[in-house]
Length: 267
Image (cartoon, rainbow, N blue to C red; front, side, top):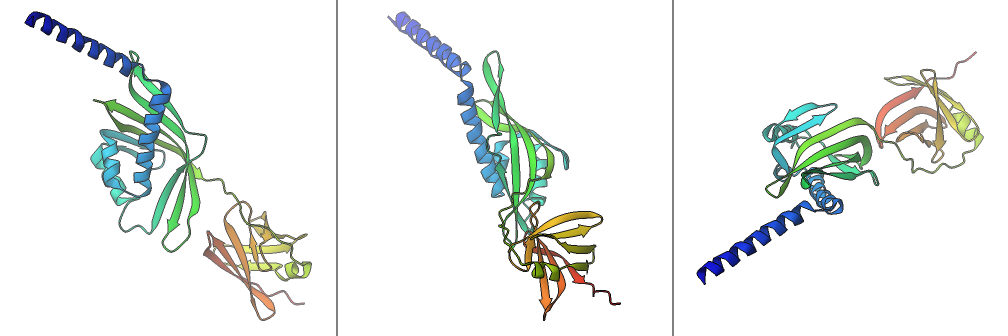
């Protein structure tokens, strides 16, 4: 009787193990993608809030971070030190927020002998910056490819590739209005700033800014505030009395240059 009971236990254990291995090996791409996307979302939540402790739990001990501008960082201690003294430094005067570009993120499971041991998630993302006391603005764009590795049933981000960094495509949300010709003509002239000399000419319901032999159209948001459709730049013409004497140039609503209007030449 004892012999039969022992044999039954062995058969059940064998069946359980073989069934478990089979189920583990037959995970579908969709199931793996769902797991990785969830893990990925947890990482970026920690990233956006600069929760370095949470990020540290997600990385593997032998993590390698490849960045096309910042170089290679190897190992969890070095990566945590880099983040703590850089983007998550307590003395920083800005916040960084990452956002994936919709429709670009894909997951690719990695298998050996039909068993999933890892996955690659890749896509495009953009970064927003909020400076202290300022509103958030879109800043950069890059491509990412991250390798997730499963060890003893747990997932960790083991390899991080961040590359092709550059400015994000600007999407203009300002609306142009019509401005009388006599108002446009009042702004015509040369403006001298610490960085450059700007020449303003008037067209049909538009101003043109000439800088270093390049011409850029400026559109009116109101009678004295103009904007570029290609970058988050505004140009405010300041009057003293009846005449225009100054041009304030703002990027992301912050003054980056003040140019004084040169007096018109007299005969």
